[in-house]
Length: 180
Image 1 (spheres, helix red, strand yellow):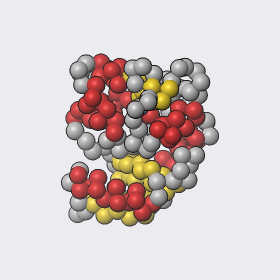
Image 2 (cartoon, rainbow, N blue to C red):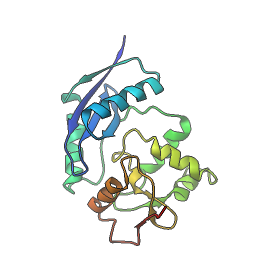
Image 3 (spheres, rainbow, N blue to C red):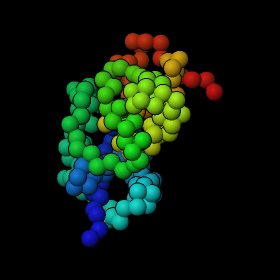
């Protein structure tokens, strides 16, 4: 029997979001218009080797949508969401470590590497961040360069900056954009 991935969309201060869940929990958040987000979700299903039907299901994602709306209004600092994550054991270890970064704080890639006991895996931490299937909920936007620079974000640095502003991080410290 094929797995079902139900999705919905929502507007947010960072643009349109596509939320996708299985009966086990949230499996993806995609930035951008529905059409391109669905194509990305289909690619992820192939990558994860999931035999799944992707279909509209607002009800399945209602709790996620509500919690994200509360977050964007500044009313929610922690998410209470079940996940259905697909990734390597290393990626899952990184994503678990990211969930330990408190709201309103940042960590460096090196901090995350040390947190999972892989001090030399700083570049691999960046790769796992990039492949985080549920950004915002798993707060990869809270990871910055060791020099305080805003570096790399799958949704773009402007989205990372907005999320950090929502959390009151920008302005509290010397976080700056990296110059490439």
